[in-house]
Image (cartoon, rainbow, N blue to C red; front, side):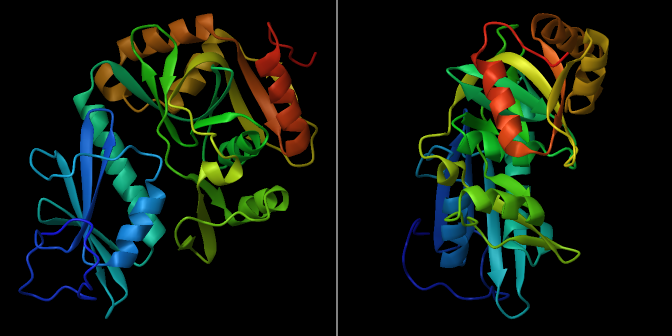
Length: 312
């Protein structure tokens, strides 16, 4: 196998081709985990390099690599087939979809190996090393808000998942995959960043698209590896209302954080105790968002102040 080769690959797998005998591969890393993507398509390899460009390069070897994924493109039936250890995981027609599945496999692999970190379903931005965690569901506008904040000068750590230290340091680590925007949100962000382009073909579902955006396209140099948690803001999208920050009690904050906590079945009481400690030490707010220029100014004021300044 020749990794990074520019030889012309077959456009579809034939029945005699081995999964390990693929002409293109690229190596990435996340923390101490190496992951490699092997494919029979130069287009797929270039898409993987764009999608995972914020992840450090991995060792140029498959020896000892714990996560080897084969992503095969079949031009005859227009399908991407994703394999791990020779076992087919999924078939899809959407390149963007299969890459998001890969980043979930990477994240889950990390989660099973590390006993010192928690994975949180949340966005995260920072300014001057002070991090603002943005937990929320898929319709709460956190990815759009994250994109707007990055364009407005904040650093980017993640839009869907971030890594929290369990040692009480309040350090949050990045999971720097592309920002995922729904079609209407993508249009809004394009208004302030007209040159913005998706890194891979949009993932279409029920006629609507998800667009994957490199945060560096919003602001060069915006990706940060870590930040110290200074505020937690729970966004709620309400397009017709002016933005407002409202303090959230510790008990409510813990309940909201548990909704996005991906380790509860394993840690249970320790999770509640750990998140309670975070909610005790970090100011928590509910945020009405929708008018994004005003919202970015409000978050900027929060990040810049010595003490939080919620609306009364």
